[in-house]
Image (cartoon, rainbow, N blue to C red; front, side):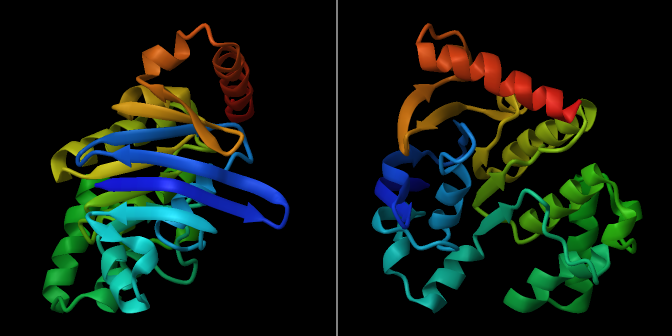
Length: 249
């Protein structure tokens, strides 16, 4: 589903991505680890050209992303869901309107068809009762669920998650993680998940990579990475996630 070759991105003299290459199979959940500032979110944004990489090649579902014109790119984006760290809901719109927005903008569904899709997706995230609430009336976990619902309402082939559980309490974080796993299986989606949440990764990951110094330095299953005797990995998993858990708690 995803092939990335020799991807590079720098901001002035600061190199963020330096020759990143990776592949994601159809139906696979790939987790991306890395210390803060190592380019994890930049990688996701380059994949859908919210940021333009400096060099490299990105192929999604057989299409060369960097060679597409804007119309072709937008057609491809219809097949990709993106869950931002903040959920990125429109504050002035109700939950119903937030979910309806991409359906009106990109598809020709009838009002009845749109309503049924909204109901179906809210049932998937167990928040049908929130359909007419405003974002200001939602908790952090509810906003994440609605953001996820909006991301999947177009039934994407590929989902990109940027820190889907950041800032949530451990119980809600676990619920979101299992929801991501359930959606992957029920909708047969391919997913790339940037996270600092080790529990989330343990629940959802088929495979994981670790970015370091702008490159994919490690790759393997979660047990392989967390039990490694490599000094960097031992330090990363013993300190990075302890500090993250302290912030959440």
